[in-house]
Image (cartoon, rainbow, N blue to C red; front, side, top):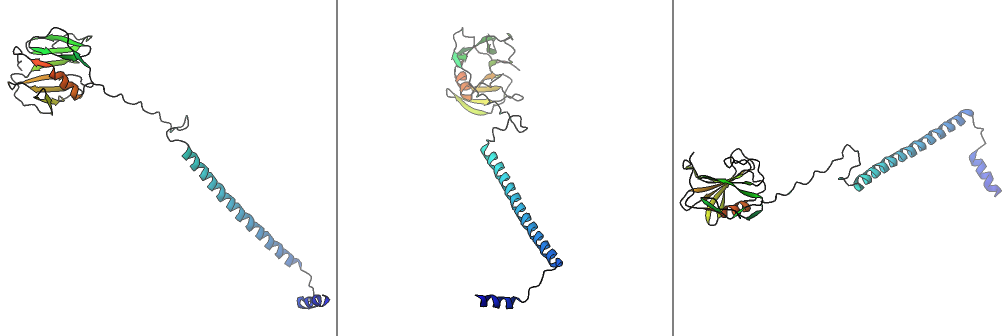
Length: 222
């Protein structure tokens, strides 16, 4: 064993005392190494923190339904109320006295024959404020095509008890409907519904099928 120590001493050479400059250099190298370790460790911690925050944000966004934003948030939206479905007019059997020139099978529930003259039959709500049968706002007017009207109507083609009909939206109106029903003599029966928002096409056809023109009905002029 002593022989091994002697050989190592000879290889290492005589001991030399370290100078202050060498000690300063070694200390500087140690401090630089320590700073590098701290920098690398700090950067890794920062990246992890950012990744964790991003993951938390993503989880929070995914777990919170988009349709339920936080109360008071600027992004909060009050859902629109559903639009009510259009319900067709309910037709009931007509029980009153039949008007001159026509017979009527059905009327809308709560409506009545308001008046009739040689050229027009008017049906209106029972509680209508306007009692004048010659004004048609909010009412149903039934008449034969004017003697002065020679235009062939066109529109949605319908059939009413085997008769040809054309359902149209009058010019300048959005809710009104007018139905032309061709009679055996070639003259058209005209049914004007001022406000047809609650009427389906089938309901209009059903109503028209219950209107029968008699020989005493008169065509108007103009």
